[in-house]
Length: 73
Image (cartoon, rainbow, N blue to C red; front, side, top):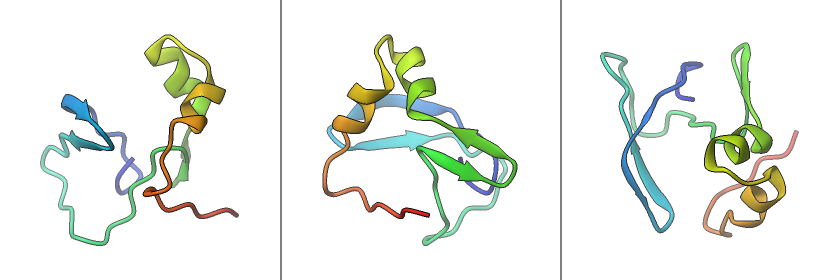
């Protein structure tokens, strides 16, 4: 999610990078992007990722590398 809006992944996820289609939404360097968590009134869970990828949420969170910053609240 970027700016409280879900953006579809486009292309192929490579290593630990991906691209999303933000449409006509204005996005700037430093804007918050949420892969797992809450932004605005919407949330994305590890289990949701798992369901979409044919696995379980635990496998999703174990696959996140240490290059990805974590912010716990």
